[in-house]
Amino acid sequence: MEFEIIKASKEYKDILGNLMQFYFYDFSEFVKCDVEDNGLYKPYEYLDDYWNEKKHRFPYLVKRDGKYIGFVLVRLIESEEGNYFSIAEFFIMKKYRRKGIGQAVANKIFDLHRGQWEVFQIEINNPAQAFWHKTIDEYTKGRFKERSENGKKIQEFVN
Image (cartoon, rainbow, N blue to C red):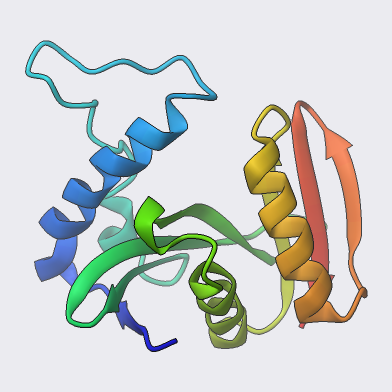
């Protein structure tokens, strides 16, 4: 299963913004989210931050056979308890799901950012919870913690 992860420079911002429309469409099943009067979802409000805060935000595009098939947005959160990486947004187009690509992409992203991780999903998004639990369980060989907090399921691990 061949795929390519591209660290998205600012030239890729519009492509990432366009792919976000499909992500919002998929996610609208779980959150109150409708298209605007122009027929598009509201733009992702933190997108510019991924090029303005380069030490704390990392945008990636995923390609297969020369075609864009998804993206991953990673954040580095700094807190008094310690710093950790987090998946802010993760998207693989439906036709490429259930083929192991998403899991392979997640593993590659984890390998690119070593340290403490927290990955969370909203509690009503059962498919995302199942995906992340399985992915992180296999990646860490079972060495992770999982908790529920504020309507989210959260997995923590160190790689």
